[in-house]
Length: 69
Image (cartoon, rainbow, N blue to C red; front, top):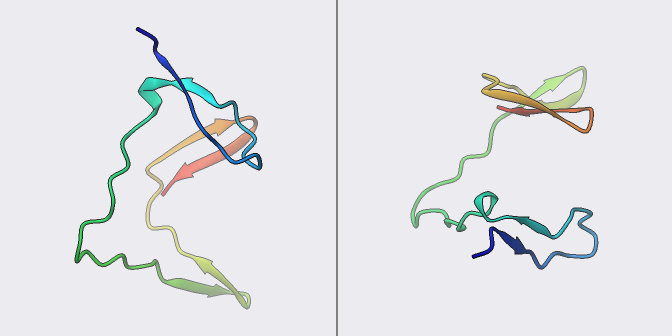
């Protein structure tokens, strides 16, 4: 049994198409009737920005910081 799967990706996506099966999850659509409320924008120095309530996690990938907010 193999532990890898090859993904069918657009040519514009620049990642390797073969990934470990543990990294692939079944897509779960939004529950019918559930409202997806977009976050409110905050205006800072004339620019629209999102206000972060809490940083839940962070990691560094290829010298770029990624935050889960």
